[in-house]
Image 1 (cartoon, rainbow, N blue to C red):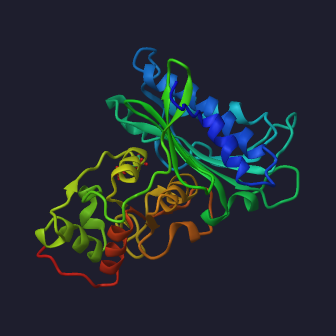
Image 2: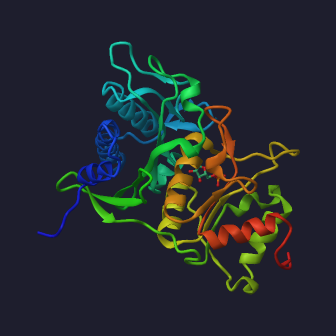
Length: 341
Ligand code: P6P
C-alpha cells in the first residue's frame, strides 16, 4: 500500500515540531476537518437537494447570503463551539464576535473564517471554499474579546482553506510549510497530495484581476497591467480570473503568477479602498502565500503586518510569485517601463 498520509497524521507530525505543544491546536484542526467534509458533501450535492439559491439576507459586508453560506456558517460554528479549544470566533457572516455558549469551556484560540468564499458564483458551479485562520488569545481567560481577535497576521498560528471544486482540497500551514490534501470520498479522509507547496519565484506568466474595474484603479496599477499584457514583459501574460478568491489564489499557489484585487477609487475617490476582508480572507491567504515562498501586499505594506481596526476591515490585495509582486511594487513606486496604454 503506498505511503498514504492523512491530514490527521500530518497534523500530529507537525505537532512534533513544537515540543511544547499540548495537542490543543491539533484537536482544533481535526474538528475543522470534520466540518469541511460535511460542507463538501452539501456543496457537491447542493443542486440535488435544493439548497441553492439566495437566503434573502445580506451579510454585514453587503454580500447576499446564499443558503449554503448560512449552512456552512452553522456547520463550522456547531462543530467548534463545544470542543473547548476556542474563546471566540469571527466570521464574515456575523457582524459581531461569535461567543462560545456559557455551557461550554473556553479555550486558548480564536478562529476567524469565511465559511463559503465566492458563494455568489455557486449557482454556476464555480469553485467556492472556506478560508480560516487561528490566533492565540491575548487575554488570560473567560470570553474572548476584540483584543483577542484584532491581531496582525504575524500572530497567526495556523491558516488554511478548503476549495470545493472538481475535487475537495484542503491547504493548510502551521508555519512549517504549506501542504495540500485531497479528500478521498471513498474513505472520507483528506490525503496528502501536495506536500510542501512552493511558488516558483517567477512561475507561469499569469495575471489574475477583474479588469472591469480598471478605470477605478490607481495609474500605476493600470500601467502594470498594460505592461504584463505587452511583449516587453516577456509575455504577454495569460489572463485568468475566476472571481472566487479561493480558486484564483489556489491556482496562483500551484502554478505561480499574480493575483490582484487592487485599491479601488469608485467608492472612496480620495483614499480608495479594497474589497477583500483582511481578517478572514487576505491575512490567512497571505500567511499561506508567504509559507509557499511568495509575497502578499496591499501595494504599500505587507498584508501580514496590518493590525486590523475592525472585524470586517477591507484591504487591497496583491499576492503571488515573489518576482511578479516585486515588479508590481516597482511600478507602484513609479518605476518600470511605461507600456503604451
Ligand atoms: P469582483 C467573491 O465575492 C469575492 O469576495 C472573492 O472571492 C473574489 O475574489 C472577489 O469577491 C471578486 O470580486 O470585484 O471581481 O467581483
